[in-house]
Image (tube, rainbow, N blue to C red; front, side):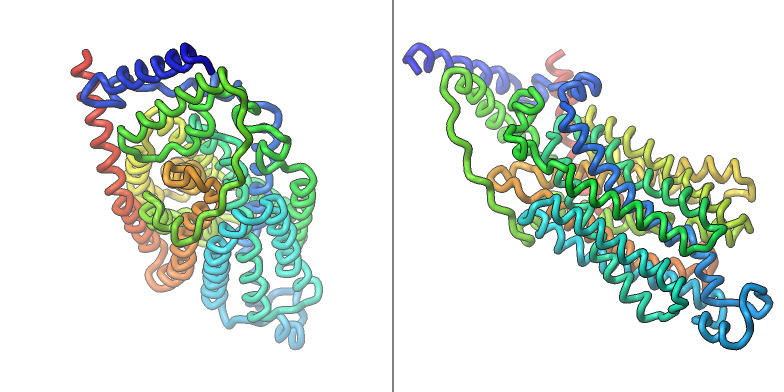
Length: 533
């Protein structure tokens, strides 16, 4: 580089720095508007599309098989507590073989216990699989979780029924193993998405992508209801076979990072460095001075990249430790908020078809189909709220507003009349305000937390942070599932919904410090813009 070129480079950097520091509020002096969704999405290639679709449908198939258990609870309960009047059973020996519980209430409590067992083991597995995912090839971990879980669900729901094996301890052991295997999937798919997609537009992209769980619920409900007339074991058979096949496709088709095809994120998308590496590590909440330093550094790199030959790539960063990840800014409050919110969201996931069938007297297959409206609302809510948070540049205000409205929606749904149309509308509204924030925290916000400024030298932390957030949420959900069955058996469903309202309020409480900080930042920005005018 000649002396004149170097002088010109630093002259440009100085101009940028003076421009950014010309007002009392550094960021507000020249607010950067986010690019339009269509303009940003046009930068992606077919590699991004393949990664998006494979990770999306991986979790769709996993959730479809997971949803099967909640969709056939009525049939399982009837099978475990057979009646002497049931013509399909011969008296005597068949009664003793099938009889696990004295009445339906005992069976319901055990089903709630199975949900809690699954979620506790799932939570423990998330803490472990997140750490493993940052150290082992994500494709191997993901495939192992998908195929292993499919095999366990086949044994649990299909093989035991074909062989007439009814044993409480066997069911518990299989469900613990299932939770551990399924926990390997979510941190891996979020980490893969984080590798391919930067922070710019992440709320919209991840909001759209996080619909995978709701789409899986819808698919699982329709698959289960379509074969339920042949027996609940065939519902497990269909979903487990499809999930296993999906795991095989992922193993041979998924690229976990642009580096696997010899391309950096910048060369793969054509985006500038501001929108790629630096942007993907931009913290969710950062000081203005730090952001100016980042932009000055990136501006200098842009000029230097034109005038200097490429330097050799740095060595692969080391994975961050578990305790370090837990202490990152924002991880703990969002994890605790997600524990309360996931309790509510997964209670609808596990108990909604059972509630509709028992409370309104609708047929089980009918209740399964009606329950999908909650997931439809969640799909729309996650996408819309993610898009709004992108344009605002803040996540917490959008979450807090949605959760406050969710409390009102829960009260309204608890008083739904015995009308399927009204029930479906109220379900969709409730799903919009509960499922939407749940999808945001588990995907976009987890990716934000796993790619913040503190991790600049250790990119391999996304799976660990995702495992912590989702694992803490699963612990809350696990304790809640047994409480739901206990409260329902003692006090009734109305008290269950009041319990949901309290837990939703708890989510708002935990994110309040982040909400206050982001609202103050927005207020400072607004005042600075007025002074500019």
